[in-house]
Length: 218
Ligand code: DX5
Ligand code: ZN
Image 1: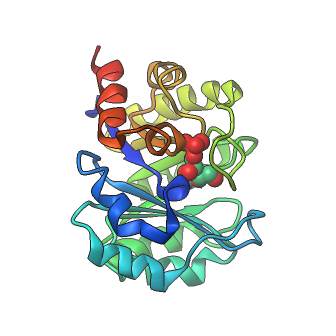
Image 2: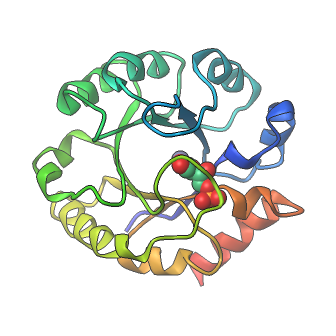
């Protein structure tokens, strides 16, 4: 299996001091950036100009999570900023296969996210088009919500499907990840863990990352 990765979400960071907040997660594998448009989800965060500035403010790879309508139009523009990966939602994409290929054509990893109640079976045939699948473990929109155990069976199904394809595709989870929940998700087959409040509510975010890593590696 892949080495576990921790991607802190800056959603619960201090938005007036984002560059400084990025410097507090220097040991992260990537920074998870939540883009919300107040249409796909009932919350609004940032768009292309802020993400472009964040890109210049850190050497960390950027994992962009687009919680927006019309990702077919917008996601390629995020890819062009030089982000490591761009994740669009299955529920919002009109042509997910074409979109994944357009992201690859721009040199970015392509990922697709599923809300907690969205089934994975209808997407298994296109898994090979993706570098990562994101299984939301809360309803997207806000940090600080409780981890939904009902997603665990979907993580297991994703793990089996990914292993059948050779195990290269990352399985990311996002929402309610903390020291109490991370092992359940890891045992089900997740390998990439987004953690927002668990990292940024800590006195020392890098220490919180180390604690989560320690749980995963035993
Ligand atoms: C929620 C976002 C998450 C959020 C997670 O819709 O996609 O990335 O920051 O926050 P926590 O870890 O606090 O649940
Ligand atoms: Zn997210």
